[in-house]
Image 1 (spheres, one colour):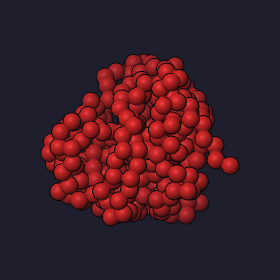
Image 2 (cartoon, one colour):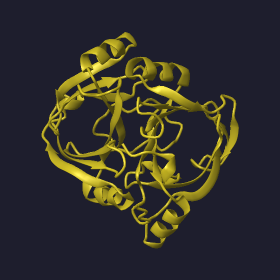
Image 3 (tube, one colour):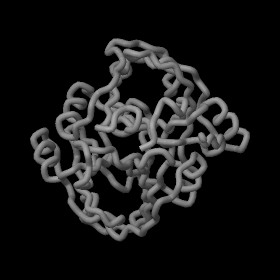
Image 4 (spheres, one colour):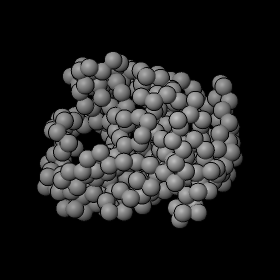
Length: 310
């Protein structure tokens, strides 16, 4: 029986958007070091009028989608995206205390073997420490300046598995209810006694929460820093380099959006019907909403048969 809770409709992550200057080099890096596989891409010269992300103009933004060994029906993907017109701007934030999406985490069979591959591409290892959740994290800055985190899982059946997204928030008391409203559940909450597991040598204190959707183990890890206090803001522009937005699977975008709006949830835009211009053109409905810190999420409507539970 399908659980179609229209007021808490999100079922799983579909993708995390990784904005860069060169999707070819970035996809090669993700394939060579983490074994991710490209499944689909848009034409490089595809010029479309954007109403989804707020440009309200024609844009050229080649995009490809890479999945871990479980494939597109089970795994979330990394949506590797570059901007040609307007161009990609800025550099990824490396300040763990700055509000926004800070890192993408992967489970790998051997951290040491993965690091050999990553160092060969120019990655910089900034920390290997026990995280507040009890497992050892290795924090790496990749050639584009994006922060990745590696956690060892010796029983993993493939070269890597997408594991978590780490987000710095301003106020956990506002963020947790917002994510719960979408359909996330709290897995664990802990105190953070030091930022050293993220490569920061100075003092720091905060609180963290692991949250998960029903159909796939990929997690959001929210951290509110209290000393020093979380500061700043997430990137305001979709074409800013780094980890920008996320897509979540819902069964029915239109029905979920209408039900949530009626219950008081604010949406940025949508529902909007689009056709994704890839090899097998995909027609779907999207809606966009932002968390309390301005991080953009999109609801993507796909029937239950389109995906498999992990």
